[in-house]
Length: 228
Image (cartoon, rainbow, N blue to C red; front, side, top):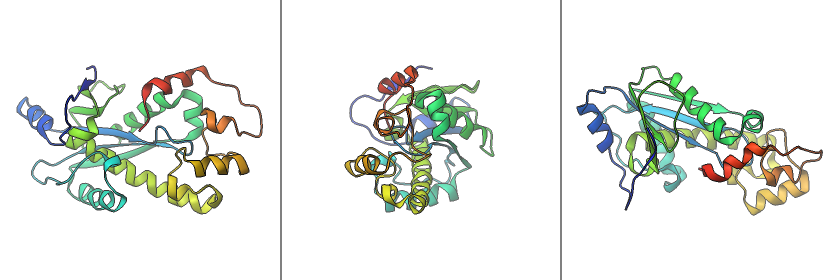
């Protein structure tokens, strides 16, 4: 189905999941990705099937939660969910197929890794190339608990990856900005150039490359796809 706008003021709850269960769907998975707008590292997606009998209170868009709260909620989601999974697509693949398609691939892989098969997908904004019935929701992570849970799981995992890579490339400050385009990150790129894990298809990185990089016109999709 085509994405729908939540409209008005967002309230994160399980209304959609309840409606789907009344229609006979038993395993509704929320799917989301993080890191789409970053200059460094993978885009990460997660899929989560929440247990209606073991609710997790306080779910919301991961970007609206502080790091400590995300960690706490992430642990509760992993403990109480019927199933959850994570998938990542690396920078080289992002450069090859574009960030929009890489995000869709990561989400498709995450769904495929669930230990319980979903019968309906609630997805943040985009459509996934799967035959499973699905509904795309603009700002889904801000008003749908299943998508919010997926965004939290993905964000916690990706942030942990950035902390690990910070030990390998300490001069870039990855633990602080998580690979996004901050002034500090831009200054590090000017001084040191890109690492092998930077996304050369993104202009701020390509401009600092130490060798010529052909522009991929597919990257124009990024400008209209939005950044998470």
